[in-house]
Amino acid sequence: MDILSYEFIQNAIIAGILASIACGLIGPFVVSKRMVFISDGLSHTAFGGLGIAYWAGVNPLYGAIGFVLLTAVIIGLFEEKNLYRNDLLIGILWSVGMAIGIIFIYLTPGFAPDLMSFLFGNILTVPRSNIVIISILVCLVLLFITVFYKGFVSITLDEEFSRARGLPVRALNVGLLLLVAVSIVALIQVVGIVLIIALLTIPVAIANELSIRFRTIMLISVLIGALICLGGLAISYFVELPSGAVIILIGGGLLGAVKLLKAAVPR
Amino acid sequence: MKKLIEIRNLYFGFGHAPLLEDINLDIYEGDYILMMGPNGGGKTTLLKLMMGILKPLKGEMNFHPEIKNRLGYVPQFSDFNRSFPISVMDMVLTGCISSDNYLKRYTSSERDKAEAILKRLNLFEKSMENINSLSGGEVQRLLISRALVADPAVLLLDEPTTSIDQPSQSTLIDLLNDLHKEMTIVIVTHDPTPFAQIYKHVACVNHSLHYHNRGELDAGHLEEVYGCPVELLGHGIPHVLLDRH
Image 1 (cartoon, rainbow over the protein chains, first blue to last red):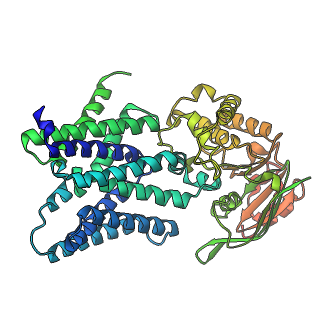
Image 2 (tube, chains in turn green, cyan):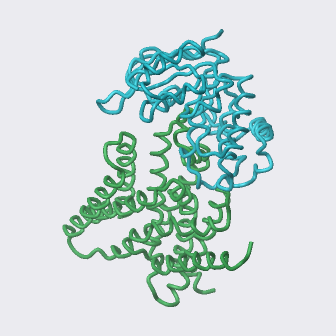
Image 3 (tube, rainbow over the protein chains, first blue to last red):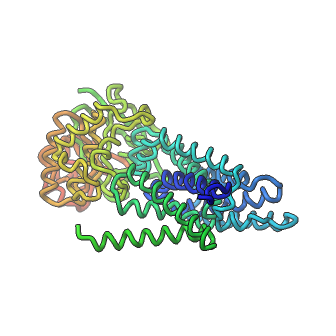
């Protein structure tokens, strides 16, 4: 397989697998805790960090990490204190983040060559340096999900009961938001800011059709994520279509097929 | 009799409007208290203050050292995420989670305890099923099982008979009466009828709280306080509330 000897293909495969681990671990919490809108808002605020990083001449991924983590903390603190209605706050942060990104990219001299890959994803252009960053982020997500699993499950199932049992609900909520933020950064180059939410939800939606156990849903989500990322990579390479969009369409198609199959097969 | 919970001059409110004012209440070992009152009167809020879910604006709540971490909470039916993919057994086990152990794995003794409680509450055959496949009565027993697994000394239930059918309600009342032999029970309810045979006191909450022992109030007093709720008198239940009703 000559194709596998190319470094950019190796990077793409590794990025796809790392992205599927991140979305499989975090996606089930995003879906079960009804954090889809928050996650989508978070991913769009990353654009602000990308813009500032372009302007400052540093790796755009660093800018995205800083901005998304900061936004997660702001949402977590405002949510706890009921200072703003949640959807209103997210709408504001989403648009302000995008606006900051647009302004800084406009102020940056020259052309931002990989801007489109951050917006719409291009798994074939992930550099080795970013693979290292994404690996560290995914390891962090894996570590924190493993250590705090019981706490995260408890607040997702019943936040009030968790509070009654003395759990640090505020810290766990902010912690989960930070992990969503970290996962979003890990997914940015694979499917792009605009499509990240699909990778956090579609594999989980498919897994929900196949299992009723949370841990199993996480595992299936990882596998489905890997299947659609690597499938999308292969198709986009051979057919020369945008990889992010292809990955999402494969996921959507797979979900439709599983739904149809379940409806067709009598229980 | 041991005083388990002592509430003194408790105030709570959202924003500037006080919801509960100058609440005083003593709960003793072996009590079976019904907490009644109109919607918005603050009875669920008082329960949540006792559980530490809400923090009072001022006032004191003292707990007997023996019941530290031994308050069992059974929330209203709709308060938890029913679409969460979890088995009955796993949900009961979440009742063991506390600030001391949420980073550790479940122990075998916790699993044994959960199994024993599910057997006692006739849910064991459903222990591997998803929670969203349960009937209303089964969900209520599941919520009680989750509270019991932490070995509570006081069980606080919020509207446990709402949303369940009559046969399930009877089963539930029998269960609570049985549990009362082992623990103190406090129930927030709109309907005192099912508990008429067993309750010891009724604490009616309507922004403030007045407490009376069983039989302390007569029908005339009740009518004077409530002005109208004559149907409650039909159950022969004396009250404990009742300001601004």
